[in-house]
Length: 199
Length: 163
Image 1 (tube, one colour):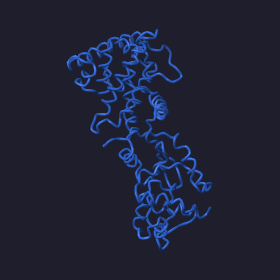
Image 2 (tube, rainbow over the protein chains, first blue to last red):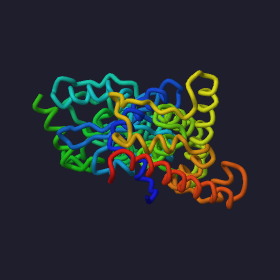
Image 3 (cartoon, chains in turn yellow, cyan):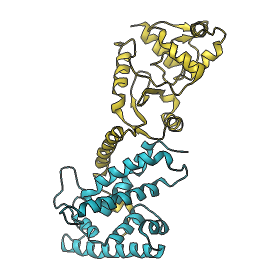
Image 4 (tube, one colour):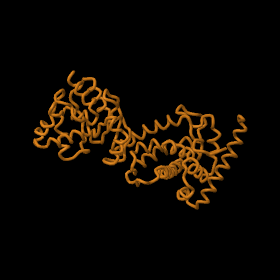
């Protein structure tokens, strides 16, 4: 008889572990240890990763950003106590579904903007003032936040928006009306603009 | 660089479950697993980035298992007893009840040494740190454990269906 780790394994381990994992999620939340909860959802612009702290939604990430890398960044910047925990993201997932089904125009979610600071956060706070289906140029947003010369800084605030879709940086375009860059790629930006235009 | 805790659960959850099962039997293994990972999640931010996460988890599981055994000793249920019938939740080693009987029959030190060396892959020096005593003693306990397991398990399965 050769003793190997597999010797004490069982066909039902996967089911047992998934049940224990769910229990851990509940216990961690109850004990205040769930610093970052995340889930992934399907959407017309690809799989989205949603992450929330106890304060609110902290990150929406596109597939092209590499979700593993995004989770590592959350680990470094917020806390390593990161668990896949769909429950905390239920409301965010539902609102995003409604948005993609054109049943929702405004997101009503607590947000945690702690991943950005200073001027970038200021810009991101103002972006929801651009209504559904509308667009602004980077120049107009610079004026909106009271710093008309900071066009480039507005550009980088949009490019580093940790909450794309929910904080609508996709509604900010270049002066010539072309979409400009986007964290989820130009195709995703165009898809969101088209979705809102046809509603 | 530190991994998200989710990754720790995914990568090491199975090993910790098997370690707990060998130490405590099927019945109490799940409670010990839950206690281990909750305590680990609490302490995780303080774990050094270059630490061996699995050895760290096994150390926590070792202490949680001691707690479980202590709590069990205060209850009327006999130590090391294994449920007779599989439950709807699914017992490990279905049809291999004899293996778990043989594991449960091992002296505690041997059972721990087998779990930590053969299941968790800890070095004998690390096991010695957990169990007290020397590395040689840990090596002997693991070897004796395997010898007893082989003897008891094989004799039991020979009485049953010959393989």
